[in-house]
Length: 150
Image 1 (cartoon, rainbow, N blue to C red):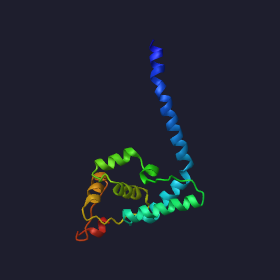
Image 2: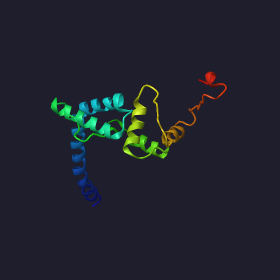
Image 3: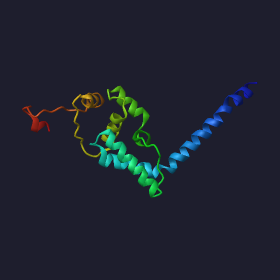
Image 4: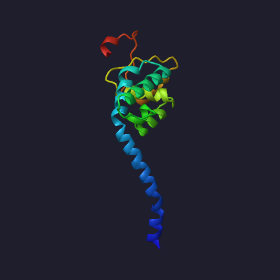
């Protein structure tokens, strides 16, 4: 009786595993184009607004299709290079939970250089301070020992 319950309980898992397997296969096939688009976003689109980013990504997807490079038809940076646990921690650390803010945080985390953040609402400032509080040193040009601290 217990074995029958276990087998019947796992019966629905077959369809879930099949769907997961198909999704992973599709992601594997689209990996080349998705990573290329992600690299382009990180390298070139960081300073631009969401509308321009979206139009650029849409044109890049069309270029991928035209050159027969497989890529996802609906692209999200967080899906390709994001980790759900890390993004959730950023949101807990006061990062706004919208696509532009998450994309900006992903670009920041994957970039080699220091970013210039124009932050009139101080949202990025709060997020950076909450995320890196212990490792962060805040300097102002008016500080007497600014050069020494730098």
